[in-house]
Length: 363
Image (tube, rainbow, N blue to C red):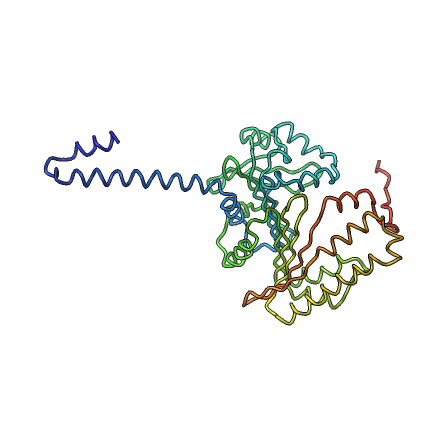
């Protein structure tokens, strides 16, 4: 406050009656600036605000978006169980060199990832926004040795081609703890572009607030026609495929609840008739699956522990209908437990699964 008093005392004598007003005004400005700084400092550490910043940089022209909050999941018992269950493939040579040169390890240093995938005539274009603890100097030095750099739009863009490929990857630092990666040769994806479709994505993101891992898919005719091809042949249903093809949005979210993962899958479109039919079919499928798991044939084929966990999964599932006015949704909620993961790992592939043919190495 000494500086405020000195400034007020130096004011011309002709305005002496206004010295108290000036002093009060300067104090108000100083307090406002301090409050604004404190607000933005608090806001920048808010997980929801950080998530929204990352998602806002993704292109609204994307067909699919995936978000993963590892910083939140690390405190979950389920994540520890998942890491213990998941196989640990040996890191490839490029990643091993990157870790050695930069000290970065994704299991320890990566906090959040937002991924957008778009389709283009040349193939899929992806954009990754990653938050974490990065040693920027080491990473940039490694990128200059392994690739090249250029300046564009006031940012330094690095490009590297993984060994054995001709397609380069491009990345830039958005700030010290945030990076952006893309395979777009023009690198345009690294810079956000205004898009009229952005509010549609934001609406879905708001619904998933508090969900540390989720995927949102904006469906089109090409994706709808591909869905039946991904379904196991014995479970294909033309009626179900036709209903799924009418969905405009599909979202899948997972949220740890103690030592289990609660999964919510939702399909959305404007037709109430479609949603009613889809809800009835999904409810019927759950009944049929439960009956099949209790059948004598399945009891013989499946490992007993795995069958029990599958049965618990189906029994935990619930089909819900949601009416948002302009759109209707069908939601399926179910729980994935560590016991299910462990039972599936111990049981291995079901009987009749073909063994992949190993080709001899080329000489």
